[in-house]
Length: 322
Image (cartoon, rainbow, N blue to C red; front, top):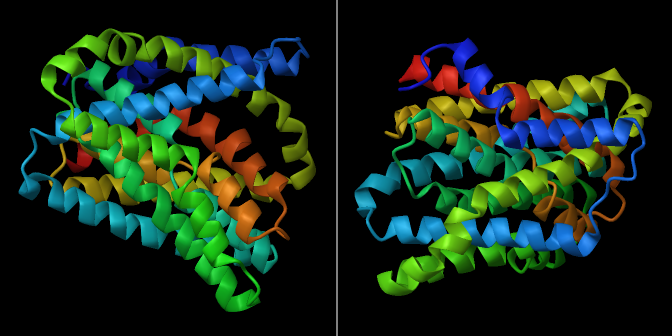
């Protein structure tokens, strides 16, 4: 392992171009700069990242035996069911939010942020600790259960939740289609064809990630005002949950046989909160929920926390457990 201490892990992360670009975006928003990406550019960047993730994961899956991935798959499913249940219970008791808002928070925190995953994967590869190439497949697997469980909770207590409509939003949403589609294409495409497109989908990947995080920084910075209105409890909730779920993910990853880097990535996945798939599903299935509450917590607190502090913290935790 190249990084042997918590300080070194933190230094590697904090000085990475991706994190620095995100911080620049936040600063730009705070000082009210006119820095902003057109929505079409933002959509194109996120689509590229999702498809490239799936493509790379599909190529790696061809070289993996079923037995090697069975444990991590089981661990991912368990996390996908457990995290929304815990998030819902804590939202009801600690935040004292209504059922719809609690279910919305559970959907966001029970799902996964593909961009946070990408940052963790890049970090662990740079640190030399990631041995698994199939982790993007686990992202696709973790994206859906958390949202489904949260919507089922709402349906049970409210009775008027459109679970079927929301499920359609999840399954046909951009993130799932691009991730799963990329996995399939990467898994069945011939090696010669994959080699030809590597300069685009591998060589440019980190640069595109930096641009996307710069844009997300401006969005996160704009949500700081709404967080102040929501009060300190939401901020505590949005930091405590990643710490809890990250610890669960690191333990699950280690027990399932993942490398230190793999356990770090799974921990980050569990600790992350969705701001692409979950909002669309909640909008369809729980229109009465306040989107500003969940998105403010997910994008305004949890995302920057994981990006700047969480990833090296989960790496240290995975190293201790491993």
